[in-house]
Length: 554
Image 1 (tube, rainbow, N blue to C red):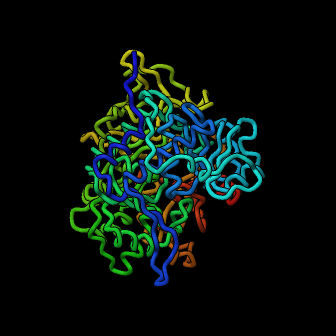
Image 2 (image 1 turned 180 degrees about the vertical axis):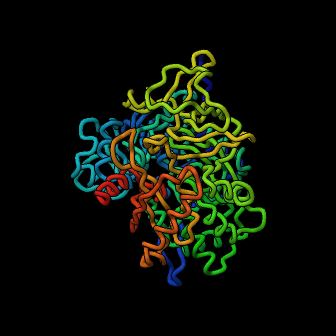
Image 3 (image 1 turned 90 degrees about the horizontal axis):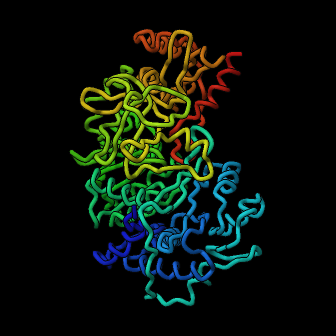
């Protein structure tokens, strides 16, 4: 059966037709004499035309349909033009978060086997020194000044083509590979999720429907991948002044200044960024009336963080926390109003974190917990409502495989030949309540199997997180698999770091005794700063904490 034509880049010329003179992107370039940030901008028509020139230039050096291309360029004009140009020619950009570390970067590039490498000089230098992609690379393109590594520069390849050059984009079908996006590796080795053009198109449509996003809005994306969705949705993208690999260290003043200056309507940020900006906003009575919505993803957002940030927003404006993963996004979504008015109290009582109902395009089921591959789907896999199991999803935005990782694909996908398609195993645990909402209970790999039963991280941690001096907690297991000793690791609020830990330990143990699921937790260890993922600075590396805890207890 022939797949329908569907190139994700097609959104850009369509938006250039609908709103040619509307700014598509604003990128910071420095500071003026008064200390105000200066910006470079392109309209939708200018971005579309520039990506046409880049597409022609890419083809001239052999970056054509199907060519896997490592893209290591900072968010900015070139990043947008290159990404849309790569989609237009039908090449396959490989997007790897530079914050995941040198070792993981080398592994990812070796697995992805790129034929072309497009990067800034710093990326090329690292490529040479660390041997990235040495076995597969044939084409080199530098964004900026090329030194000794050969290949061409972006300026050289676009120079022969006029500003108004036309380009007919590749007529890709919906199943054709559009990109390879690497997972953060926060719960294992980073894996390259294979995105089809159909996956991207479905993702854009789901975001448009779930959040009622309309062309003409102004977006402040603090995560590079989400910056690409803005032009596709017809939003103006304002690139913030920040280190994208360290959202927890963002300067809240710069974020707030950008929101106020451009009258931003949509803000996307990790929980750590939302927390940092919210703390500043509360301390300085900041009000941001232009915002229509805030979206935060990457890890559960504590209710206190939502409440604090909501204080900066107009009445009725919500902070949405979509649930999903690199392999599938969005899966579920819930707003801050429902969390603060209904589900927060249940979370504090150990019921898990409510992530809302599945979005319309997703079929979500909860199956029995199993660490082994599951070859074929059967309804008998499903557990009863209210029972904790593994979350599995099926839908057009769900990716079908990992690149060059057959064993990972086999473990994560369940074929459904009877109904067509497949289910993706999220690796997350949760349950469905009587209202059809899904409650998140933590990663499957993080559950703590003790002699007296299984403990799930998120429900247990939420109970202890109610302590006023606790910033966050992490439940880990120490000892023999299947017979683990549960240990609670605690990171205190900054101002409580030097207080009497013995008294806080006793208070936490008393809190734990009040709930059946936490009664068996008797070991409490204090950690100055949890190890967290680079991408969102929010997912806790419980595996590392378990090793640390074992050392402390020994």
